[in-house]
Length: 315
Ligand SMILES: C[S@@+](CC[C@H](N)C(=O)[O-])C[C@H]1O[C@@H](n2cnc3c(N)ncnc32)[C@H](O)[C@@H]1O
Image (cartoon, rainbow, N blue to C red; front, side, top):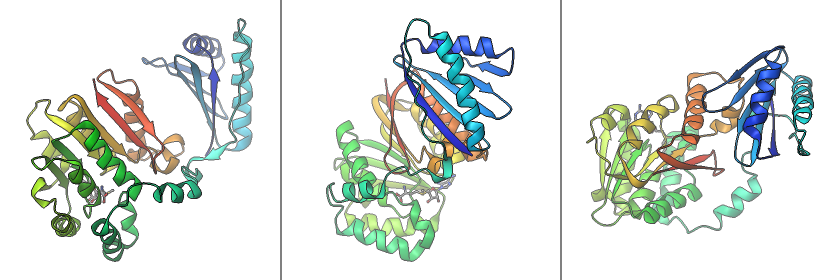
């Protein structure tokens, strides 16, 4: 389903959203949610309006490019009519389908892989081993730049207590553990004995096995059994997407002030922006991304690293 967005520079976004919702509510379905977002639903498609201090965010989706143009036209005309005290520039992006979004240009992707700290022999060998053992599923492994980012974040936070949800063959756990001090601990959660047996082998080879406690079983049960205290310095979530909101909730309440939760795949390959995708994992990720952006417990930023990485830092 084609999607198009516009960021309109203005300090009056909340006011415009209320005006649009109130005015268009006479002609179409118009809803204002508790966090100030507006949704206009037309026969051709929808427009979601998001308020911000310095701009109005708009996302239009429709069945085809013609429908997108129709919704853009109605919303733009009304918005410009309400903007009597300023001259707004409404510049829509070309419509693109969520599943065909090019999140990182391959040229940029290759260039940045060549410009971060080398991963080292053990991690390079683990990439090869994972490809042999897991075939197509090896795509679940974090990339070298994302691994370097994890090590960097662990060090920047000065972490001693880390949690990982989603171990697979252990690449990201090695990156996290390598950032910990000698007496640091990583609680690594996964349901698979098969994948984590490879992880154990490579943790040994990387010299970090003594810092990692592996817990095989549903991660939600493992997290719920942890002390309900703010002792966690950093957590990395990279497992079943349907459970992300529950993982986030269990972890955020255990983060110490300044502690960080890192969430992988928050774009779901671009599908999170495209309402044509309505499976449970799409709905869960959309819900969580919206929640984190307005969660008063954390400061957050979403990075276009690979498939999207959110950093949420406990206040
Ligand atoms: C995307 S992979 C993790 C990749 C890993 N971070 C890496 O860098 O190699 C997702 C992992 O989550 C695990 N997983 C899926 N559902 C789970 C659950 N309910 N609890 C714990 N782990 C789960 C899978 O077994 C899989 O190994």
